[in-house]
Image (cartoon, rainbow, N blue to C red):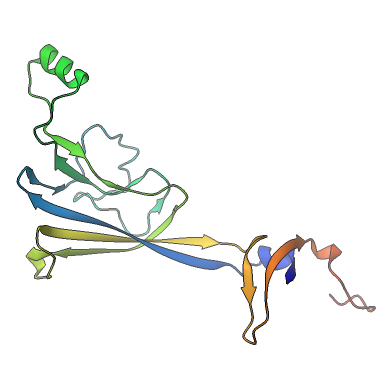
Length: 180
Protein backbone atom coordinates (compact mmCIF):
# COMPACT_ATOMS: atom_id res chain seq x y z
CA UNK A 1 0.00 0.00 0.00
CA UNK A 2 1.09 3.56 -0.67
CA UNK A 3 1.50 6.13 2.11
CA UNK A 4 1.17 9.89 1.52
CA UNK A 5 3.10 12.06 3.98
CA UNK A 6 2.89 15.74 4.78
CA UNK A 7 6.06 17.80 4.31
CA UNK A 8 5.53 19.09 7.86
CA UNK A 9 6.24 15.61 9.28
CA UNK A 10 9.60 15.55 7.48
CA UNK A 11 10.46 19.14 8.48
CA UNK A 12 9.54 18.61 12.16
CA UNK A 13 11.58 15.35 12.33
CA UNK A 14 8.52 13.33 13.36
CA UNK A 15 9.73 10.21 11.50
CA UNK A 16 13.48 10.85 11.72
CA UNK A 17 15.49 7.88 12.95
CA UNK A 18 19.03 7.35 14.19
CA UNK A 19 21.08 4.45 12.77
CA UNK A 20 24.20 3.32 14.60
CA UNK A 21 26.85 1.38 12.70
CA UNK A 22 29.85 -0.24 14.34
CA UNK A 23 33.20 -0.51 12.54
CA UNK A 24 35.93 -2.76 13.93
CA UNK A 25 39.67 -3.10 13.35
CA UNK A 26 42.00 -5.79 14.71
CA UNK A 27 45.68 -5.48 15.60
CA UNK A 28 47.58 -8.71 14.94
CA UNK A 29 51.04 -10.02 15.71
CA UNK A 30 52.64 -12.05 12.90
CA UNK A 31 56.07 -13.25 11.77
CA UNK A 32 56.55 -10.13 9.62
CA UNK A 33 55.94 -7.88 12.64
CA UNK A 34 53.03 -6.39 14.50
CA UNK A 35 50.34 -3.84 13.68
CA UNK A 36 50.88 -0.54 15.50
CA UNK A 37 48.19 1.86 16.75
CA UNK A 38 49.47 5.34 15.90
CA UNK A 39 48.48 8.83 14.78
CA UNK A 40 51.74 9.06 12.77
CA UNK A 41 50.65 7.36 9.54
CA UNK A 42 52.95 7.51 6.48
CA UNK A 43 51.71 9.14 3.24
CA UNK A 44 48.41 10.37 4.73
CA UNK A 45 47.29 14.01 4.76
CA UNK A 46 46.74 15.88 8.02
CA UNK A 47 43.17 16.56 6.84
CA UNK A 48 42.32 12.83 6.95
CA UNK A 49 43.86 12.58 10.45
CA UNK A 50 42.25 15.72 11.91
CA UNK A 51 39.92 13.85 14.33
CA UNK A 52 42.55 11.49 15.77
CA UNK A 53 43.86 11.85 19.32
CA UNK A 54 47.53 11.36 20.24
CA UNK A 55 47.04 7.56 20.34
CA UNK A 56 45.55 7.38 16.84
CA UNK A 57 41.90 6.80 17.80
CA UNK A 58 39.07 9.12 16.70
CA UNK A 59 37.59 11.39 19.39
CA UNK A 60 33.99 10.79 20.53
CA UNK A 61 31.72 13.55 19.16
CA UNK A 62 33.64 14.02 15.90
CA UNK A 63 31.56 14.61 12.75
CA UNK A 64 33.21 12.20 10.30
CA UNK A 65 32.66 11.69 6.56
CA UNK A 66 33.87 9.27 3.88
CA UNK A 67 37.66 8.89 3.79
CA UNK A 68 38.33 10.20 7.31
CA UNK A 69 40.53 7.94 9.43
CA UNK A 70 38.83 6.44 12.50
CA UNK A 71 41.75 4.36 13.82
CA UNK A 72 45.35 4.85 12.70
CA UNK A 73 47.15 1.57 12.06
CA UNK A 74 50.42 0.74 10.34
CA UNK A 75 51.46 -2.76 9.33
CA UNK A 76 54.80 -4.22 8.24
CA UNK A 77 55.28 -4.19 4.46
CA UNK A 78 56.90 -7.61 4.41
CA UNK A 79 59.68 -8.81 2.14
CA UNK A 80 58.08 -7.85 -1.16
CA UNK A 81 60.00 -5.97 -3.87
CA UNK A 82 59.99 -2.18 -3.57
CA UNK A 83 57.96 -0.17 -6.08
CA UNK A 84 59.83 1.93 -8.68
CA UNK A 85 59.01 5.10 -6.70
CA UNK A 86 60.54 3.59 -3.55
CA UNK A 87 63.65 2.54 -5.49
CA UNK A 88 64.01 6.10 -6.84
CA UNK A 89 63.62 7.63 -3.35
CA UNK A 90 66.24 5.21 -2.04
CA UNK A 91 68.64 6.10 -4.87
CA UNK A 92 68.18 9.87 -4.43
CA UNK A 93 68.28 10.11 -0.64
CA UNK A 94 70.36 7.00 0.02
CA UNK A 95 67.94 5.76 2.63
CA UNK A 96 66.06 2.57 3.15
CA UNK A 97 62.41 2.91 2.14
CA UNK A 98 59.72 2.94 4.82
CA UNK A 99 59.07 -0.58 6.08
CA UNK A 100 55.49 0.15 7.18
CA UNK A 101 52.28 0.74 5.24
CA UNK A 102 48.99 2.44 6.09
CA UNK A 103 46.23 -0.06 6.98
CA UNK A 104 44.03 2.37 8.95
CA UNK A 105 40.28 2.03 9.49
CA UNK A 106 38.54 4.65 7.34
CA UNK A 107 34.91 5.80 7.16
CA UNK A 108 33.13 3.90 4.39
CA UNK A 109 31.45 5.83 1.58
CA UNK A 110 27.92 6.89 2.59
CA UNK A 111 28.42 6.15 6.29
CA UNK A 112 29.16 9.66 7.53
CA UNK A 113 27.86 10.70 10.93
CA UNK A 114 28.87 11.39 14.54
CA UNK A 115 31.19 9.14 16.53
CA UNK A 116 29.18 8.15 19.62
CA UNK A 117 31.37 5.45 21.19
CA UNK A 118 34.89 4.02 21.03
CA UNK A 119 35.71 0.71 22.69
CA UNK A 120 39.24 -0.72 23.00
CA UNK A 121 39.69 -4.41 23.86
CA UNK A 122 43.26 -5.45 24.60
CA UNK A 123 45.22 -8.29 26.16
CA UNK A 124 46.98 -5.59 28.25
CA UNK A 125 43.65 -4.80 29.96
CA UNK A 126 42.89 -8.49 30.59
CA UNK A 127 40.36 -8.97 27.76
CA UNK A 128 40.28 -12.45 26.22
CA UNK A 129 40.89 -12.29 22.47
CA UNK A 130 41.44 -14.88 19.74
CA UNK A 131 44.96 -16.20 19.11
CA UNK A 132 47.18 -13.79 17.18
CA UNK A 133 45.01 -10.76 17.96
CA UNK A 134 46.59 -8.28 20.38
CA UNK A 135 43.98 -5.52 20.33
CA UNK A 136 40.52 -4.73 18.87
CA UNK A 137 39.14 -1.20 18.47
CA UNK A 138 35.40 -0.71 17.84
CA UNK A 139 34.02 2.65 16.70
CA UNK A 140 30.25 3.37 16.67
CA UNK A 141 28.97 6.01 14.25
CA UNK A 142 25.43 7.44 14.55
CA UNK A 143 23.70 8.68 11.41
CA UNK A 144 20.49 10.76 11.45
CA UNK A 145 18.10 9.84 8.61
CA UNK A 146 14.91 11.66 7.68
CA UNK A 147 12.02 9.70 6.15
CA UNK A 148 11.89 9.85 2.35
CA UNK A 149 10.06 8.38 -0.63
CA UNK A 150 10.67 4.63 -0.78
CA UNK A 151 10.93 4.07 2.98
CA UNK A 152 8.65 1.43 4.48
CA UNK A 153 6.36 2.24 7.40
CA UNK A 154 4.41 -0.13 9.64
CA UNK A 155 1.89 0.34 12.40
CA UNK A 156 1.29 -1.77 15.50
CA UNK A 157 -1.78 -3.46 14.05
CA UNK A 158 -0.35 -5.01 10.89
CA UNK A 159 -0.93 -2.02 8.62
CA UNK A 160 2.11 -1.27 6.49
CA UNK A 161 3.04 0.64 3.38
CA UNK A 162 5.74 2.42 1.41
CA UNK A 163 6.03 6.22 1.34
CA UNK A 164 5.03 7.12 -2.22
CA UNK A 165 4.93 10.92 -2.07
CA UNK A 166 5.67 13.76 0.34
CA UNK A 167 3.14 16.53 -0.24
CA UNK A 168 3.43 20.19 0.77
CA UNK A 169 1.11 21.15 3.65
CA UNK A 170 -1.14 23.27 1.37
CA UNK A 171 -1.86 20.24 -0.87
CA UNK A 172 -2.84 17.92 1.99
CA UNK A 173 -6.56 17.23 2.59
CA UNK A 174 -8.38 19.38 5.15
CA UNK A 175 -11.85 19.63 6.73
CA UNK A 176 -14.58 22.09 5.71
CA UNK A 177 -13.72 24.39 8.62
CA UNK A 178 -10.06 24.53 7.48
CA UNK A 179 -8.65 22.14 10.09
CA UNK A 180 -5.74 20.15 8.59
